[in-house]
Image (cartoon, rainbow, N blue to C red; front, side):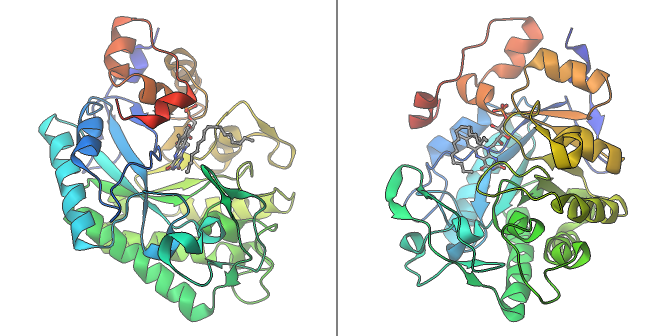
Length: 347
Ligand code: FNR
Ligand code: 8K6
């Protein structure tokens, strides 16, 4: 009943995926202390090369974007070389891989980069502390100046260029899950009064500047974006956010991105201000390639594609538990259930 997942899908003239199952980006905190992906990381991705497209774990564009221990970067020569090893291993097995470009904004912590403060749209801190390092409480961020915002845009574009140098087939800009780009898009984290806040157009300005700078650097056909119109992680929702995303999606509709990807853990979650689930809301506003995700099985995901709810299915936790997920689904074999303890090891 999952045949549609095994049909090829052309993202555009340059990229065709062999099937419609994507590996969702999954932070594993397994880079070495210079934030370089190791051989074990390369082997882990290579084992999943039969997915239609791997989206890498979130990868920081510069040191002050780091919010978790041992998350990989893509700003140093060593990191680029480490990723080259990963992309070669995936390509050798016939796979495709995008890099997910990340800056955590106010969810960063000065502990990781020996800094004095973290940057975000506004001086509004996120409650809580770093997972697995609970002694590191989140700090009140410093609102980025217009110059600092320009530099961030340039650093995303440089990271995209570095990703291509490292052999990635494209990049997904991480605009979801309450991190820097998402912080600009929600009223609870953005109360700026300059051209980056206060209205939907202003709140979408930085995210769109990043999309455009990255597209210009490596081509829109190799640029994707992940968004969370429904606030659910590291951020509070506000019913006015709806207008921001209405504006953002209308703007994205005019661009030719490789795809748009929903950021959510459970796509059955309904948001009153979106009038339903995150994917149903985006599907109504955006007609191009959409990647759905969030607690789907191959069966429910296949059905959602059949019902035209989205075009491609990203799978996260089941792919942590089953490196051979695609083959098992194809053969109708039983999957191993995911459990959080599996995060301790790369299988
Ligand atoms: C995630 N997720 C995630 N999302 C993202 O955009 N970048 C990331 O680096 C991560 N990292 C991450 C780590 C772990 C351990 C989990 C469980 C999740 C979210 C992920 O991409 C996906 O949206 C969710 O896991 C929901 O899909 P599944 O797992 O229900 O198929
Ligand atoms: C991107 C950094 C990820 C760090 C590890 C995340 C581990 C998440 C484990 C899954 C738990 C689900 C969390 C649900 C989020 C909010 C629901 C309202």
